[in-house]
Image (cartoon, rainbow, N blue to C red; front, side, top):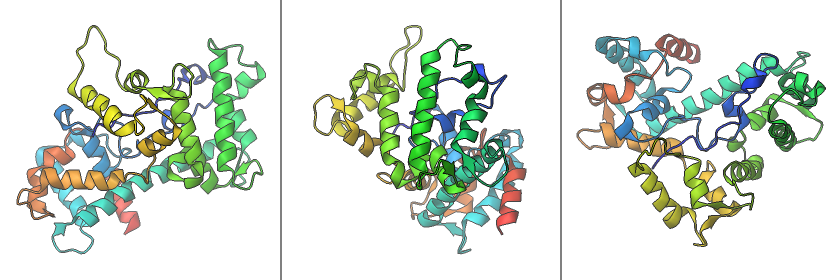
Length: 319
């Protein structure tokens, strides 16, 4: 299955010199970007698997290690995943580990931005705090200083709509949990309608409220310089016709988009656990030994895995 970062942000680069712009992953809903932002296609490398295995925030400096260092440190991480200490990693243990890293990424991401928005340090983030921190200067100028005024106004309205949906008691103030729902609506059942609506809005270029095949592929792939169509694009076209377009009318409506993108419909952490075991389990006994993992150390740990110092601090704190 191809994993594209489905929903990319409208650029806030013009704001950076004046206001604190919300990072891309907060501005738009991700299909399941909390596992990795990379394409899940092993023919183009293992970045997706690296980040899913050890978390995106730590997946930065592991390529600086020698092969011997990386294997030694990978072995220590394996010890942590093996919760029953039987010397093997089961599908259940690997699934729980990936979900743990996934949740930690969300928690750390929210914590990182909480301080930016809780201006009065009362342990809450009001809509006015968020709005003024993100758009303050341009609100005063009514967005006259930006080239695409309509896009910024639309972005503000969309943020407000999402904030109100996350604000369960409708008091205009977000608790930590409500703010998490605002930043990561894909994780909350009561935010599902927002996830679907934003997805359709982002991909639906002709504004008819539906996603056709051209729009579906165009959000993932735009050929450059007469670039030939990769095989994964052909696969995605087939997925659209065979699986996504359930009623076979040539379009994806809101209900079909919901079945396509929402976590809970598909457990991506579970799928990734199955994939890692399939690629690493040499004796096909359904579990991974340390030797099997070290044999596939490149698959799991080369290039983009982790700032191991950060990970070890995390492990130490949790133990």
